Image 1: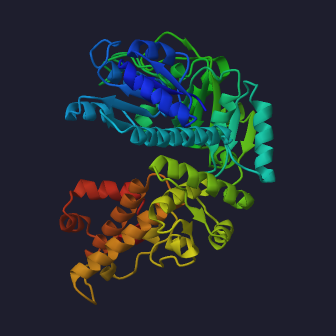
Image 2: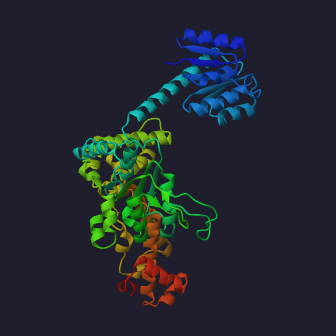
Image 3: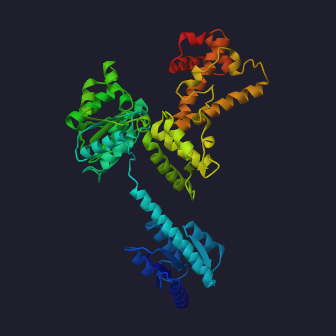
Length: 500
C-alpha cells in the first residue's frame, strides 16, 4: 500500500497523525506546506491525501483547496480529506465541490480521524481494483470459435494499411472492431474518426466528409475541416457505407484511387493520408446488382472483408457478456454491487434470438441494473417480451404499428365501442409505451423517428378511410395543411390501397 500523505503547517497535527497512523500500521508521509505536496504529486501519488485548507504554500491563503484541485485533476480516484479549524459553510462547500472525500473540522477526535482515513483507504483500494479489472478486460469479448476467427483477423490486419470492409448485423460491434484495428496499428497515435453516413442528412454529408471553404454555400461563414482532414495520419471509419448517396460514392472513389480531394467550394487539392475502414449491415453485393452502389467503389472497399457473427451464432458468449455489462452498468450508475442472473434467467437468455445482438444485450443489462428488484435477477424480473409473453398488439420489428392496425376505425379511437374515449386513449398510449420499451431493449436505433413515422402513417391512413380518400377533408380533420398531407403520404410510402 502507498503511504498516506498528511499536509498541514501545524507541526503538532502532523506529529499526532503520524504517530497514530504508525501505531495502526498505516504508512505515512508528512508535508508542512502545500507547495512541497504539489511538487511531490507531479511524480507520485499517495493512497489517501489528508490536507489542511488554510495554510501557506499556494497562490492564496487557501493552499489546501489548490492542492485538492490539482490532486483530483491529476488523480481523479484519489480520496482527499480536508481539515480546517475554520468550520465555516463556505470552506465545506468549496471542499466538496472540489471533490473532497470528507470534511474534517478541527479539533477532531483522533480515533474518528483514523476511522475516516481507513474508510478512505478502503475506497482507494476498491477504486484501484476496479481500474485494474477494467484494464484487464479485453476491448472485445468472446470465446466462441466465430469470435476467435475475428480476433485472428484483427491480429493479421492491424499492422497493415489495407482497406477493410466490416459486415454484420446491427449491434454486432462493427465500430469496436474498427477501433481495435486502429488501436493496434502503426497509426494508433493519430486520430480515429468515425462517421455514420446514414445519420447525416444527404445535403450535409459532402461537407462532413470533405469540409468546405468559407462562402461555399449559404451559412458557410467560416472554413471547416471535414472528416478526412480530421483523420489525417490516422483512421477514418465510415459506418453504414451502403447508405451513401451515389454522387458521394463517386467522390469517395476518387479519394481512395488517388488520395486527393477538394473541400466543398475549394479549388486546391488536399492530400489524404488516411486508412479507410468501412462497415455495413446491408448486402453490398445485392446493392451493386440493383445499381444502388458503385461496383468500382465496392471493389475498392472490399479489399479485405471481415464478417462479424450475430449473437445467435455465439450464444456461448452470452454469460461472459452479461457479467461484463452488468459490472459496467453498476460502475456507471454508482451501484455498489453488480446484479447477477440466476441460472434459469441466464439459460433463457442464451436461447433467445436477440435480433439487436450485443447492443441489445448491453441495453438489457442497463435496464436490469435499474429495474430489477433484487440482487439476483430471476426469469420473472426480465422484460415481459423476453419471458415468452410478448404483447400481441406490438411487434419488435420496424413498421410494426402499421402492420398491427385493425381494419376498423375504432382502433384509432374514432368510435370506441367499449368504455369511454379516455379509456381508448389510455389503451393506445399503453401500447405505445410497450412498443418504445421493446425497441429500446432490442437495441433499435432512432426509436423516436421510427415510432413517429408509424404514428403518422396510422393516423393519416385512418383519416383517409374515414373521409373516403378525400385528402383535403382528411387534412382539415387532422388539423394539417393540404400540402403537408400530400408530402407525408409520399414520405411515408403509403400506396393507394392504404388511402381508401
